[in-house]
Image (cartoon, rainbow, N blue to C red; front, side, top):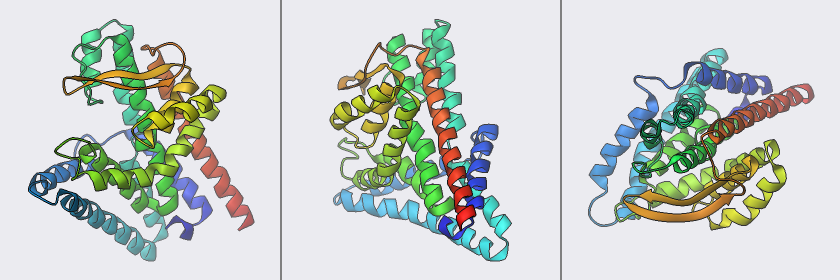
Length: 316
């Protein structure tokens, strides 16, 4: 665990992991999370059949997650006995593979550009790549809303939750969080197919995200319209179906002073979701604003980690 490492090393590894992510982005070939997703698809097809689907889902989660987390822990522990610098580098590399900060930018800012160029077909195509809702007939406000919501929610799922668990447990902690979050995104649906099988994945992700999500919501509030963000978090989050997405997205929408939520089409049916935020409906120009909020929150977290590390080193 990172409690065993020097304070300065924690800050350096976090900074290095974030810089690698922003410089290199996602690996275009052989990305570990893509390989994990393919493995999860095969396991789900084999085990999500017949009776006892809750137990089958719990076993599937253990089967695909724990061996990989144990492998990363064994690797980093063994390297630490051999050479701490190499171990630190591997921790930072694991963090890089688990972060998705640049990926958020690369997938959402082109949507904003397409909307500002009045290229609605292109914006629909780009938005469909990052959300599960139907975008074939979506208008500008629907696409802008989807882009902002994806940025705010995935700020926690792909960035801040990963940073939180990295500080707690190093590379293995980041791996555990991202694998659990990936399985929730793949299996954690309340549908006839996944309601029982994906229950374990959804509940574990809820537990791992509980603290990071609230720290993310607090960070959004501090860096935006604080009063409105806090008001929206307090009054709107309880109505959202996800215990963690509710605080994150309501606080983020309030911080940006825009309205999100509302109707969205899933599997051909209109789903009325609770309102988020307050103010005018989101437009294409709000997607870059949401990205800046996520980027500033990342800088805030890295800065706080560095300050705590410096203070720890001075008083250790």
